[in-house]
Length: 120
Image 1 (cartoon, one colour):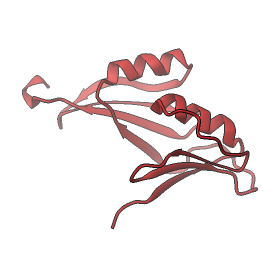
Image 2 (cartoon, one colour; image 1 turned 180 degrees about the vertical axis):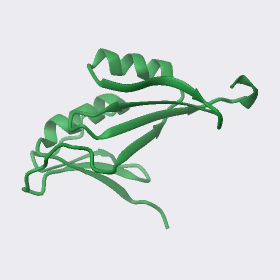
Image 3 (cartoon, one colour; image 1 turned 60 degrees about the horizontal axis):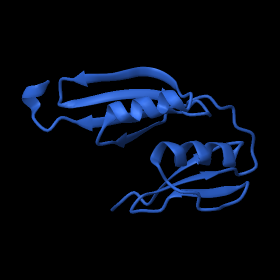
Image 4 (cartoon, one colour; image 1 turned 60 degrees about the vertical axis):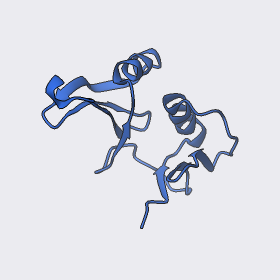
């Protein structure tokens, strides 16, 4: 079994989809005010408005993306005005993690793995 899709429910599909396209370096793929695909690879990332009001408070969800250069991604997040929760920090399990809020206040984590765990 594979995860086929992660969908973020929002009141503002164009705004949230644009944020994730900029974060992930994905070109505009069209869409409408109700539903947009951001990634369509093995696991899709979509943004959707089902017509119900959202409170834009994180409620037990965190998206995590693995990146090659966490410092580069951190600088990009600062340049687009993302609210940083925790800047990049080394972890004992061989990763460098950071976290921030997306425009709807969902928590997003970026992580990169050190090639040599002796670098920790």
